[in-house]
Image (tube, rainbow, N blue to C red; front, side, top):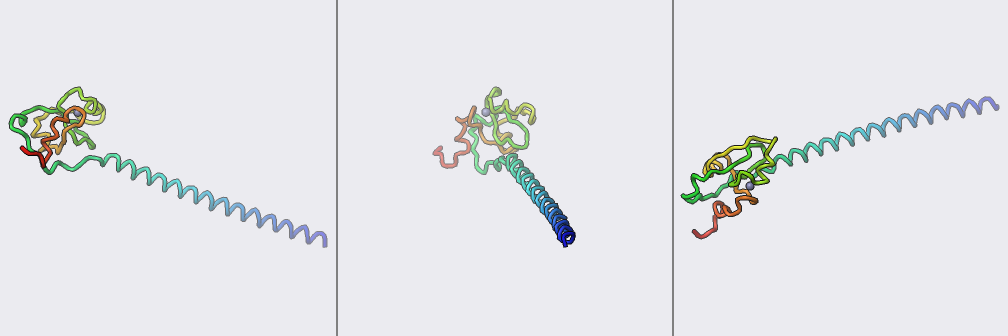
Length: 134
Ligand SMILES: [Zn+2]
């Protein structure tokens, strides 16, 4: 009588252990899946970071005296502005990321789809201002 009860208890223990292992296993699996989801989210955020480039300007009007003006651009995947000052801090951020180019203002806008830099070329806002009275 006593012996049977002990054996029953042992079997219960084994079952409990098995259950615990199964639970642990499924917990670990869930955690792994969560990790994968986080990684995917990070990838999406990274893609959004590089996709901040605006589409090329749909309107621009370059005054005749500025057509031949030389400007600087950073030729990389994210830049969408040109600079009139070679030492503009925004332009200097290009170092190590892309190629510097010195092109005419017209080429910067037409070929590279650039807008004026708000740090060094704010006075050129009017080129893209469709509503400005000329
Ligand atoms: Zn600038």
